[in-house]
Length: 119
Image 1 (cartoon, rainbow, N blue to C red):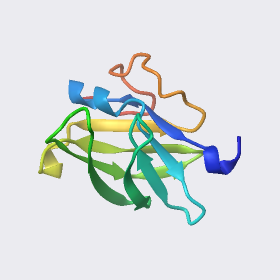
Image 2 (tube, rainbow, N blue to C red):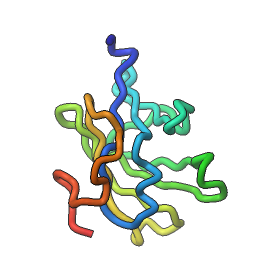
Image 3 (spheres, rainbow, N blue to C red):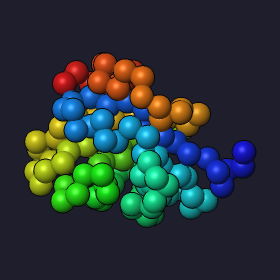
Image 4 (cartoon, rainbow, N blue to C red):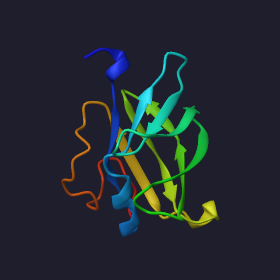
């Protein structure tokens, strides 16, 4: 699989149950060190995201809810950040982790995520 096919799926989260909707969504790296964010159905939901930024999107399976994610780190093909589905980032619901080579399949998504913070 070439770099063009590389996916970095969200495989774990901390926080409220709504975070379950993020499992299986993924980041796809671009040659300019930015990422596109895709939902589970491979639809692009946000483009040209860089580390240190915040972005918003809607998921088709949760209509009317605007999701906010931060992209806070990029180390060893592991991406981490915070998520919330409201307007106030100080009320962040939890954190997420996406890892290259991960399946994005549900395992124990609400368990204390590796490297995640306690909810």
